[in-house]
Image (cartoon, rainbow, N blue to C red; front, top):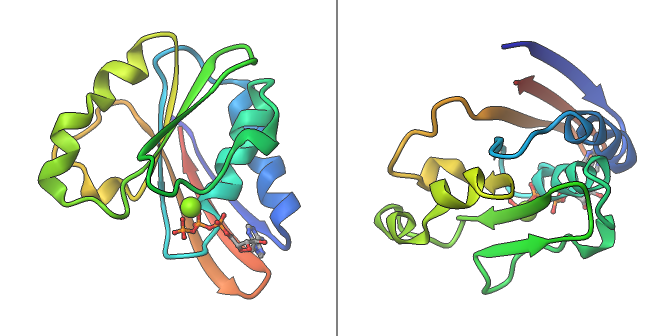
Length: 139
Ligand SMILES: Nc1ncnc2c1ncn2[C@@H]1O[C@H](COP(=O)(O)OP(=O)(O)OP(=O)(O)O)[C@@H](O)[C@H]1O
Ligand SMILES: [Mg+2]
């Protein structure tokens, strides 16, 4: 396990931090992203996609789809946004199985999970001001 702290001053800088993490991810890895609304979790997922060789424009803020799948890179990236879910509803998604199959699983709002995800990397993004974010990465 390693712990890193970053301070970024733009969305692009956050994407770059994520890209470096994404480049080192292996099949079965899970990344839990916490932080308040607009902190930059989806921006971070865009960087993970880039690091995996996936077109970052594929990454969208999930609307009614809870899990998105992005292909075309070194590994498939599964992107889940649990914001709108009740805690108990996450049991039915089969998130654990997705992570271990052919890809990597990134989860926004992991506090909605009912099961712990042992071994998952955690990313905590804190808003300092309009353009500044503090990011703690445990991987
Ligand atoms: N340093 C920064 N890093 C990341 N995003 C930043 C930064 N500075 C400003 N922003 C802006 O903050 C917003 C982050 O939006 P994003 O959708 O990634 O957040 P989120 O955490 O996924 O929100 P939600 O909880 O609604 O899903 C974007 O508008 C982005 O341009
Ligand atoms: Mg988001």
